[in-house]
Length: 313
Length: 272
Image 1 (cartoon, rainbow over the protein chains, first blue to last red):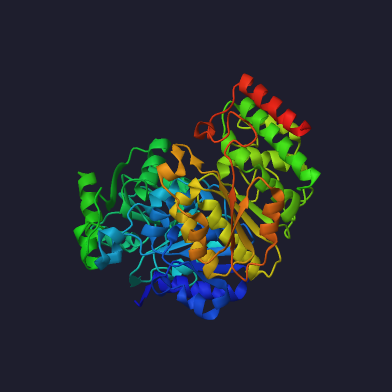
Image 2: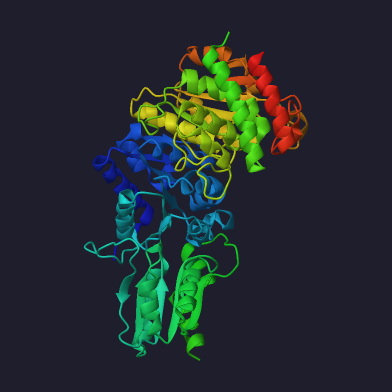
């Protein structure tokens, strides 16, 4: 299947939206060639504002534009937009419920060769804590396009976490993207052996793991959480309640992200399924080929299968 | 000679600041008293606002970037009729819309929630870009503290203001020379503020920050397409003898007895 980068889909969709809605403006911090806001810049230079290498100001200026009636998409790398500029996002955007779309790319260790300093593994946790923040973590290019369109329709702050690599597209062109609604990609039947709750680039790994386990006769459900917040705890609880084991999978720290959201849901619903988390285990990233890093950090189908075997013991 | 309305609004605002912070038993009187004439000059002179339509699209925007001076903003807004003056005494109380730092969604007339220093400057740049982009004639005014200039974000915002030639934007620096830990020059010297903003591409002017005429004059000048920065020389705690030039009154409320003494001084000033 053809591979496409999520950020290319972001840039293309943004340029389309520019034609449809004059209120959309785009801000970047000297990374428009990497975040792909360059497509919008080329078509609508008068609605594109480069803030230079100043991410804190990027977020403050975006808030000012939002409070003046515009719909700003503010882009930079996730490590800077969610990390460096965190408190400006929290106060100028979150606290004022500004209609800013944080479309932050190069999230997670799939950044690859740039290494640990640039690999954001805590951005979901940071954004989850902000009241009123919607969080989308798309798994491929098609879902990214859907998420970007949905973000433009939402009134209030939205974080879209956009990974760097070109990946195979899983989402069908006709797939529905309903914000806040978990997508059941594979139904393990009435009492599955395992339910894998995955987000972002780990969705494809979850599907691969499910297929391999199914070949052994296991019944496996796979849920794609494209919206981390608001979290569809109802669907997750319903599916997990019937499962013997539950595994969360994300390209993010196991602290504060999807794994935490699933754990909170299971605990509060009193679901006693065996539970394990696939994610980054209290470590920083490092330079390397993204696929090799996914193997090294145990963020792949093999790791999910291994975790299942542990849980099933 | 500043006009009578502004002189009297300033005295009333000072009395309200004392009453509010005394009633709240917390808050920031020093930097509120220093910014009185700046806000009076804006709301009574330079800025187009309408208390009956706080969200009016054509209004000029006023961002109190030094959000801890909320008492002066609330006093002036109440004086202009944005909300009942009687509510001022609810400052900082549970359930009050008059938060310790201004909240745009709670207080009529507040254009931006502020308090975390530097952010108001940055947001005001966004508002000014929006005004230019929408071809609206409104102006944007941001009031900053001089201690606030220690925040790097102010300078990121200043760079962008000059880059985008935001001649619809004015920064007014409440230059009282003091911050919580003491003199700016001892804590972290901000140096020649006007020179710094000039170097960043601003039109600058230095004025007596307690003279509304001088402030308005500086706000009326043509900047030649540049953003404006007015360095308003002020006295922290201005108008209350025992608070003047005392860093200790940055974030401390007057006791009942101190408030009484302060109010007596302000009454006398009004008569004199």
